[in-house]
Image (cartoon, rainbow, N blue to C red; front, top):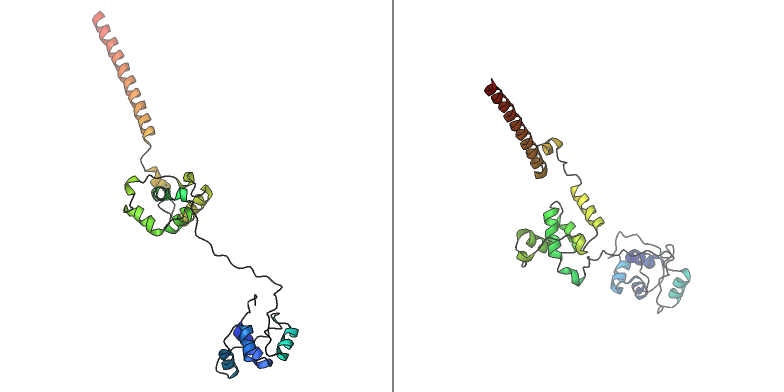
Length: 225
């Protein structure tokens, strides 16, 4: 039987109550042990289970049932279902090529430094690593810590920029936004402060030159008089 029987015990209850099939036939069809079918017939098992008609739900044809009742040695076959139920595929672990596996610690260090808001599970999805490796790199106990260099996982080809941006957006979702007033009180870039200092120096220099010229004119005038 290539087809799987739905609710085998409920089907066995119905076959015991409504057919003359042998215990072995019912056990084979429902994939149960013959003693379990006998216990159902004796009322010792499946108490409270409502029988399910396999003919109504299309798992057994009436001709197949009649053929089985006429021949005690005949093995019933489950009808092929017309509705194909797709099987759910489990998500396989992220595969990383062997040539790029040595770059994962560098990528992890880059993510921990540039995106500390990412959870370990997100880093695992991005570069295909383990939580133990992430913790060892974060705590500095990794066997190759001294030689690790932060490198962008997108540049290394371990993940796409879209995947990285999506994980960052998820990590930042719901986090409090920075206060604009607090941001205005932060230090200005060095380039801006340097330019401001240069401008102030030029202004003071011009003021000193103008003052010197004025005093020189006054001193020259007093000598003539």
